[in-house]
Length: 459
Image 1 (cartoon, rainbow, N blue to C red):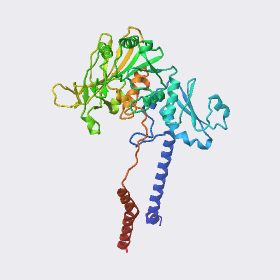
Image 2: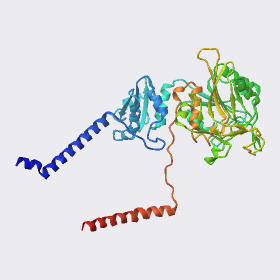
Image 3: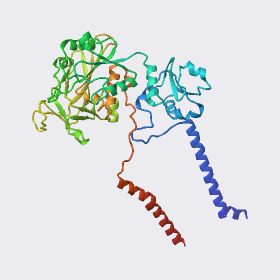
Image 4: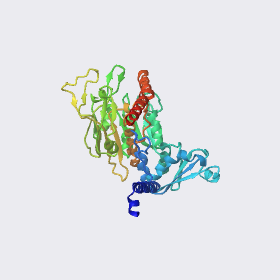
């Protein structure tokens, strides 16, 4: 009788069902235990919208001392900041998160200098503490940077010879670049070298952004002395075009200084048919070929493209006291024409220089003094830095990485967080009507017909 009961169909079914239930319960328990111990997630979005950037990861993972992020919000609203803050905690065991209700802990809030008690955070690294300007990755990582970089760093922009204007908000201005520098905690100011004939001492980095008129010799001498005494300079010089309203001076005095350092800026214009694939003109050089240098190492690894309008080619050689590295080259399909007073393009002209052509380089100057090395970056284009183009491709990363390297802030060099992409689907009225009819009528009708068919067959 017992044997018959064990072999009964109902008994086997019950045993199978119990086994399945136990397996499911065991899996759920294991998953919950692992989820409690290891907080892991996968971001499938195209631009990693829900992941912290490489810059943030580099900064947080490189912490040498404990850090605490204190988050202030009413207890019922802690969830507003928890997801983002837990991502920081997962990057390093040195990061601790403290959630405080300012109404329940007013003294602690006052100690940290908090005045806005709703959805704000204070980042403390060692004895230094900074309030996040916004409850975003940029705001919190910016607070980390201000904690770690306790010295004032000023980027000075030369003005007075037709350069791009730092505060201008039009397409040719640099106001967006100024905002990006502020996020990395750089101060900015303009300098007129003709007034003082020297670079101010507070300048950590000097920027020459696309002058259209010639620098006079005293200005060039001031730049020369600054770099050769251990200063840092960022040069962006366009092709010296002479086309109607587009007139760019040769700037022989300044290019002569760069040539003495081993960087020769040729008087030509790079034309790149690859840019036309993206709907751009041939005067826009698209770059994906990078050298081996800290400024572009991350961009080379991730194959981040950059683009340069009205660019000129560069030739390099090491001089007595300088060492030069390539940063970026044009595509092999690019060529450079030397007739800069005509808009005519002849790709078969035997006088054309064939690609790939060097567009950007970085160099060091040996001052003979310990820990006082001069540095300079030279790019044969300036328009890529303007408001109209700095947000395109990887231009902003190249700009900030260059300033980071020049300022000896190599730990900040990375690929920055990108703004959310517009992923909305745009449809015509006809397409919208087709989707509406399909979803509300055709698909439900198919389900009904299939159901009737199955019922009829079983009947």
